[in-house]
Amino acid sequence: MQNFAKVASGAGVVALAAGLAHAEVVSPSGGHSIDVGLDAPIVVPGDTPLKVAFFIATKANNYVVAMVDEAERIAEDLGFELEVFDAQFNAQIQMDQLENVLENGDFNAWYVTPVDSNLMCDVVTKDAATKNIVVATSNISICGRDMNHFADQWEPGIITYVGAAETVDYIGRWMDTVVADREGVESNALLMKGFAGLTITNALEAGAERLSAADNNFNFVGQAYGDFTAADAQAKIETLLVAHPEANVILSSYSDMTVGAINALEDAGRLDDVAVYDIGAGIDSVPLIQEGAITASATFAPRTHVRQSLGAIVGVWQFGVMPPPVQDGLMLGDINNPVLIKAEDLGAYTPQY
Image (cartoon, rainbow, N blue to C red; front, side, top):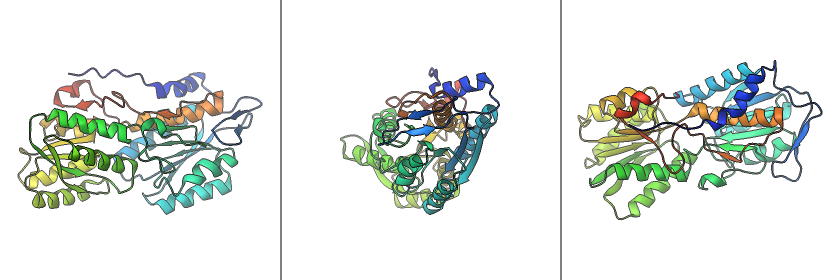
């Protein structure tokens, strides 16, 4: 049984603002300037209500549904306007949304989970700043920082980046933890990834390459990209199981895809001889962990991501307080010590989505 205590640092500013019970979130009288690392600061005008545009990659999975739910709850509690823009995992749709919102000037703060870190680099980090828009990003790197270490995820022009769990540091340590959990067992692994080019996908591929080159008993024999849905993952894993009958481990980068992988194992009659490890530990994962279909699951914390991101925006807007340039967004453990949830841990664990 593990101790799951962790200080929820990202909720601090949100909790403070809520405690003040403002009818709306406004900047201090007279306004203030914020240094975001560019030639000119962002100017927050005095006595101006906060209006946040929340640009999400997609609403098509439970993780993002939880993010939206948390964001709308915080906006209602604190009294600021928030509108959600769903890019449907289409980079051009999101780019059009960003440019349209920039042009119409209806929002003075953006919370962005970018679909394509390179395509929207300038509009998020430079163009927004010229309009004095406060920007926080999370989950997916911006401006090609995908393979940077977590500490180097901040880009000039934004106030903070939230999300250690998607970076090469955390993903690498998670993979190391899985290898350690199977010490002494010859492991032939399948890797179920999300969309190509995402921060977490790039980190998974780097981790797999590193482990494959190491002198250990853990080998990756097959990999597949997916769209984060159970149905797609089931089809991909079914194909990989046929191509690689020696596989005895599956690593999955998201809970919904894990469900699909388990369905494929069940159909193939291989639930008992293939160990499944994933990242997510969502509500749907709990019974699968309990019954042993998932050996262990590292946690995703979508609500913590939102609290830290919106907390950063509120802190800058209302109090003139700059957040750390990077925040881990983790609910358990830290970037060097991912926590694996196993059946014996479920009594002390509450999933965020």
